[in-house]
Image (spheres, rainbow, N blue to C red):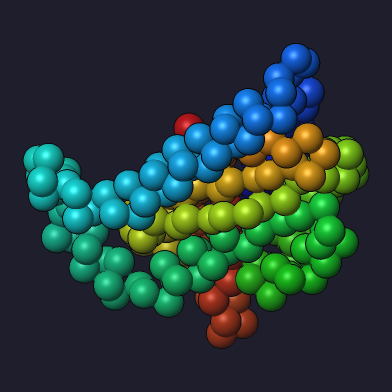
Length: 195
């Protein structure tokens, strides 16, 4: 089964611009932060094309590439799942289960509802007025194929904002998502965070 989800947003709690800053200073700091975030996102999204300028990227094996190409439906489902799991907001937390229920089997859905979307996690989202403003999912790759299961590694990043205090955090993620056919339909049957 999937690992329990952390119920806190410690990076969002208590963050503020601090006492004594003028509104002009706050505006300049805010603009600076937006520029840095914009540049970071631009570099992140263009990193593959930049690798040619600054050295070669690590070689991927032909076997992994062939497996990924041959299991494109499983890879696409794993990416959709990883994105959907985190596409959450204090405004849509009650609809989250319905949105992703079609992507996973019943056992995993029950686990997700009781652990990942626990009442304490939902409460933190509501208290912090937290929501995802940007998601980036790297192209996933097949890690293992065995016993009718395809395990796909999905890496990416989420940017959460807080309407409570205007802070933003970047939370990278890396999952191994298990995909298999259940009653003729591809479903996610397990996922775990890579450490």
